[in-house]
Image 1 (cartoon, helix red, strand yellow):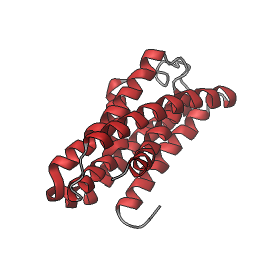
Image 2 (tube, rainbow, N blue to C red):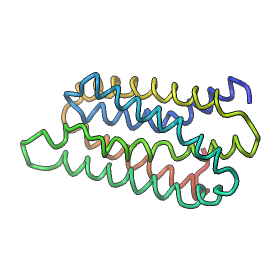
Image 3 (cartoon, helix red, strand yellow):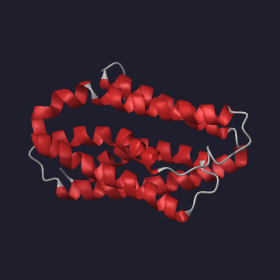
Image 4 (cartoon, rainbow, N blue to C red):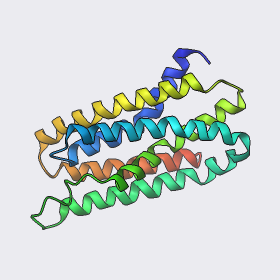
Length: 189
């Protein structure tokens, strides 16, 4: 597979990470540069790890990824999105809850946004394509898109105010629905 095709695949895979990063940029008001780096490392890392796992699993796991993975991504994004909306609508004046960095949530988001990269790894195995260069490119693109998404989300969130977290939760839920519909073959994008 040529470098342009690999780059286009990496950009397509990074769109979910970008959307979630944008949402977290809205929600985390006092995010530190070290936390932004953690987001980029997790999203880029999982985007790199999943194709390797898919490549190693090869054809044997193709049915699993096409059947179960969209449901897992949907459920994870739905729960996280609903939680964001609930926290935003709560009457509690304590902003520590919604403005909290969590490795647990970060890990769940990284898994949910990188499941499609597992399927790409299976594709590489089926095509008998070397995976080292694609994995590096996929990880770097997700890393960069994550940083851009968080900074852009902060700018938009600062402009629109605190209740923009509701929109972030809705975006996560819609992203989960889109992944599920694509996985079920109902929506083709």
